[in-house]
Image (cartoon, rainbow, N blue to C red):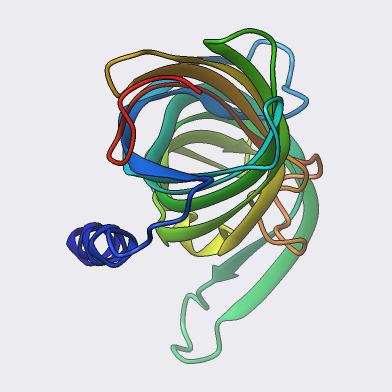
Length: 248
């Protein structure tokens, strides 16, 4: 976390040397509210995550109406979930020989499993959106574009209660079995961004945006999830313009 914050600070000081007539830049901070989302199993529940974002922004004015923007933000994207799970599995067990140790026999059975999983996401991303804005009035703009995100630190952990085999006569039951699928998270995430912003007269910007991932946050070969799980987050932010004191 600290390394990414240092990068943002260094970039901010470097940007202070820019003196372009049509360039605005500054710092921003706010909140991410949302969850990784996909086609849920019947009976699944969850709670959206709320976390901070901090970064900097650039804006290049193409005309009185149009502008190109770029942000660099460090943000938290998390949530919690409780979902039923089921599927096919290969159950393995070993039967010890009663009188000849070392001659144990291993058996395999193709069967099913079902149960519940309780888990959470706690992911830190470095977000780089690039977007175009259109000015509706002196103070209001709307914008849209694309975003690429780099996973700095990913966490997808929880516990599972699972029955393997026929529930009436199961092979085995496990309760509170911990799992950690953090290594199954994709390093890169790509998506779209859409939002609006109020540009105040005293160097302040107030905005809200929605980001939606285009791909899954999991690797393609992740065997436990067949559907695409996308990052969908609402962002509220406050920006401080370093090089300007009033809306254009």
